[in-house]
Amino acid sequence: MKLLLINPNISDTVSDLIRVEAQRSASPGTEIEVLTAPFGVAYIETRFESLIGAYATAQLAAEHHARFDVVVVAAFGDPGLSGLREVLPVPVTGLTEAALASAHLLGNRISVIAISQRIQAWYREVITAYGFSSRLASIRALDRPLSSIGDIQSEHEQALKALAERAVDEDGADVIVLAGAPLAGLARALHDQLPVPVVDGVSSAVRHAESLVAMQLSQTRRGSFAPPPTKPNRGLPPAIEELLAAGALRRQF
Image (tube, rainbow, N blue to C red; front, side, top):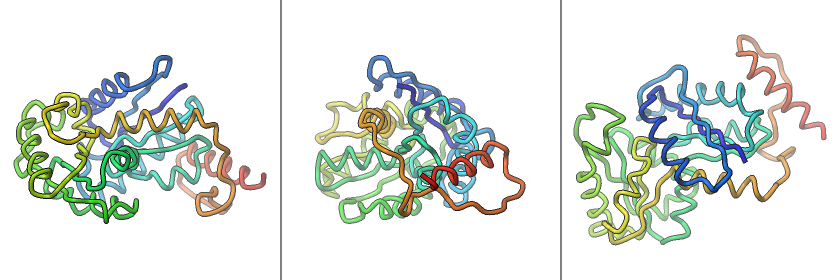
């Protein structure tokens, strides 16, 4: 089984964190590859930055998906996930979707711990779109400058832990989700240090991705996730043009 994880941000240090946690979480024999966005921002906090990350992810997915059994959008907020699900011939999941699915099995009230205040509005919209707004106990986030996106865990671990404790004590959280690829692997460090389960997006995404492949489900050809219809286009990268053409062909069967 071959899994492709795409980091929609340009941070190689974050891709390294993703890779380490994905390899720890994967089943024996599963091959992991992590690709970093060729353009964009260091880390996504806003809706517009998510738009940029989604396009970078789409380009990498179009270029490389043929070598893999499943694709993971490896950023919280899952930039471009729904669109990729329309066109890719392999299953697609993302850190938010997978983390919420895992948390759903562990408790009723879910709290998300994030790396910045600005990111909260976008996260809340994504969680609502996935149908989890009634389960969301809170989103708590760091409120301090971030000197290095790749060093958030080492620099702010205790502050993140304190936010999680407040989410449990003050917000009634049954489950904590650590949001964002920069926090990949932190759940392992906090294991047994918090009074409720702590969910990691990367490990959840890898395990759910493996399950999707193992179930050998058929591709969507009708409904809202059917491939886009054929129409003229201009200025698209060749790989995206080919992906659109292949999707249109798939609709015919």
